Length: 195
Image (cartoon, rainbow, N blue to C red; front, side):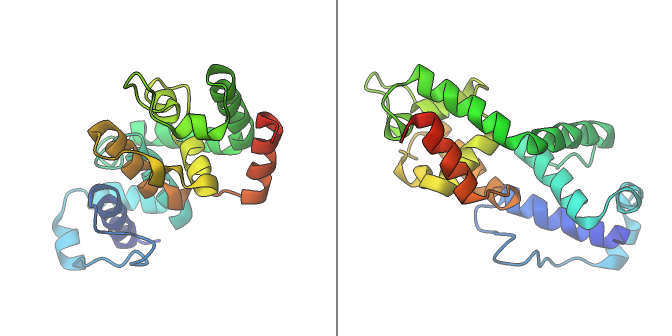
């Protein structure tokens, strides 16, 4: 990967995470950028460093981890912090099944009634348990993505609530970067929920 390719990858990822209309999967990462204008930017040194340090898939993961963590620049203005976020993301990815089991068990123990209960609005006006769990950091974004890939729960939520809308958007934008072997996670879900 060249520094300019790293820069174009960054632009596509940033657009994906910040624009409601751009989908990096549908567009296959296509983005307009001029190499001559890139060479005039002082950030070219940062992208050169990243191009030397990471393969393109690793760089995409680094950016996805940082955008998903809330950094609107994908970590490119604080590379050491971005690398820390990426290392934590790699660790979470490597223990994805374990974390999913723990978080699903938390939801199951806290809100009896199964999957539908997790996605339903609380009668007292509180957010659905799945959103509450995420907001209180008891449920990770990866678990939300897995559950959404398995059960499309984001289609069932009230997105007129701005908090729910923000979480749903994040789940959908982050989803292409989380690998989910569906049958495996369905089996894990059924084991934990006793279905």
